Length: 409
Image 1 (cartoon, rainbow, N blue to C red):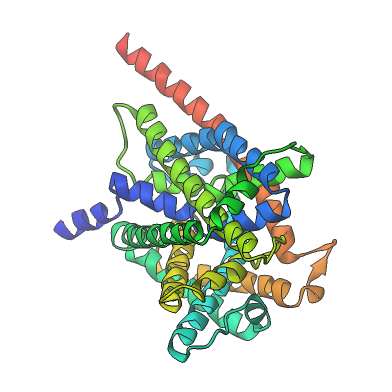
Image 2 (spheres, rainbow, N blue to C red; image 1 turned 60 degrees about the vertical axis):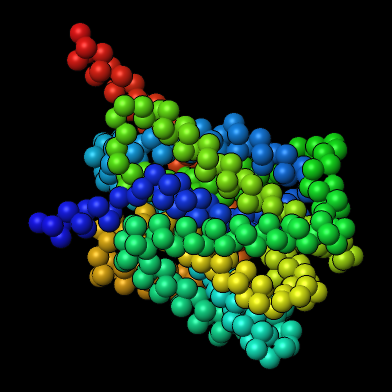
C-alpha cells in the first residue's frame, strides 16, 4: 500500500515543477534553434512583431484553455476524446501529431548531440572541428546520435514525473539561463549587443503577408507546445484545482509564456548580435546556432569548456521537449509501449535524416519529408487542435458553471 501511495505521488507535479516542466517543453529547439532561424528567413523584425502579437491574442488564451482542461478533466486527451461522441472520430489526433513531430525533432536533436560530442573532442584536443557542414555530411553518425537521443528520452520518461521530468527540467533550465546571461554580457562588453537589438526590435514598415502570418502563428503554437496535447497531458499531473481553477490557470500560463518568450528573445539577441558584430552577416538557414556561437566560444577564456556545457544543456532541453511528446503518445507508460514508440520514432527520423543529408532522394510535391511534416503540423494540425481546445474548454466551463448553480439552488 505504501508503495502504491509513493508511486501515485511520483506521478504528480509540484506547482513549480509543473511550470518548469512546461517551460522545458516549450524552451527546447523551438526557441534555441528554430526561433532565430525563422526570424532570419521570414522578415526579421516583421516576423517578431507578428509572432509576439500571435502569442498574446491567440497563444496565451489557447495555453490557458488547454491547461484548464488537463487539470479539470485529469485524463489523457485521447481518453477524453474517446468519451465524447463528436470527438471520438479524431481521438488519435494528439498521438498522431506528436508522432509526426518527434519524427523530425529527434533528428534535429541528433545534430545537437553531435555538436556536443565534437565540442568535447575540441576541449581535449585543442582543435576546432565543430561546423554545420560537418554535422550534415555525416548521416551515419547523425543516425546513431538520433537513436541515442530517442533512447535517453525513453529512459527519462520511464523514470516518472518527479524523478525524471521535473528534476531534469530544473537543472537544465537553470544552467542554460546562467549561460545565456553570460553570453549576453559578453555581447554587451564586445560592443555587439546594440546591433542585435537594432535588428530585432527596430520595427519599420510591417509587410504583412498570409505566409508571414501563418508562419508566425504556427511558430507561436510550436514554441509554447500548443496544439498537440502536451499542455493538456502535463496539466493532468497537477493536483486538481477546485477553488480557483481559472485564476491558477491564468497565473501559470502567464509565467510559462513570459519565460518562454524571454528565452526566445535572449537567444535571438545573442545570435544576431554575434553575427552582425563579427561581420558574418545574417542568412536564413538551420545553421545559425552552430555558426554563431562557436565564434564566441573560440574568443573567450575557457570558451571550449563553456561550449561543452552550453550544448550539454541544449541537449538536455531537447530531451525535456521530446519527453513531453512521449507523454502524449504513451496513453499507458509501460515498457512495451515505450519500446514500440522508440521503433516508430526512429523509423520516421530516418526519413528526416535523409531529408537533411540527401534531400534529392526524398523530395516529393516540391519539398522533403521534413518540410512537409513541419508545414502540416505548424500550419494545419496545431492551429486546428488549438481551436478545438478553446471550444471544448468553453463548453466544459459552461457545463461546470451550470452544475454549480443547480447545486446552489
